[in-house]
Length: 109
Image 1 (tube, rainbow, N blue to C red):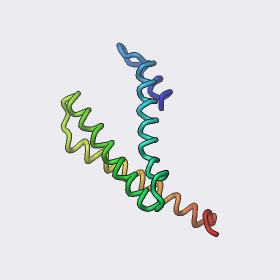
Image 2: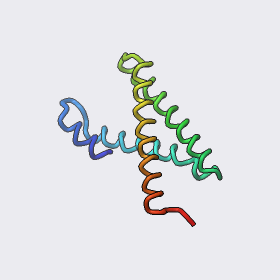
Image 3: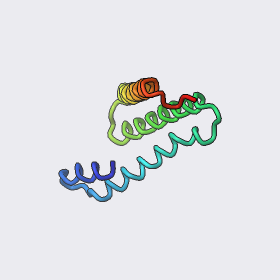
Image 4: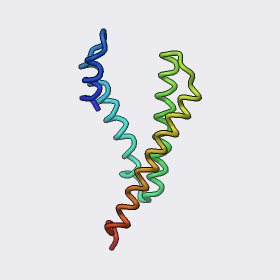
């Protein structure tokens, strides 16, 4: 993520690619840590999954709020759009993982 941000920012005049890459990397790491914490502190995988989804929606809400204030963009539509896309990707990945698990018998004892 940092490398992609660095490269994309190199093409934008007046922006510091190194700073953009570092900030993106830090944001990415913090987000990943927040999303995996429930799996380390909860015994039930389903409860951890639900907690992770709540955390993800909260992160999206806070990020969208920040952007809407900083850039003066509409909040509600953008927040709903980002949440729908993120949860849609999560559901798609869960479905693919479920199919792979069933197909290859992964995790069965």
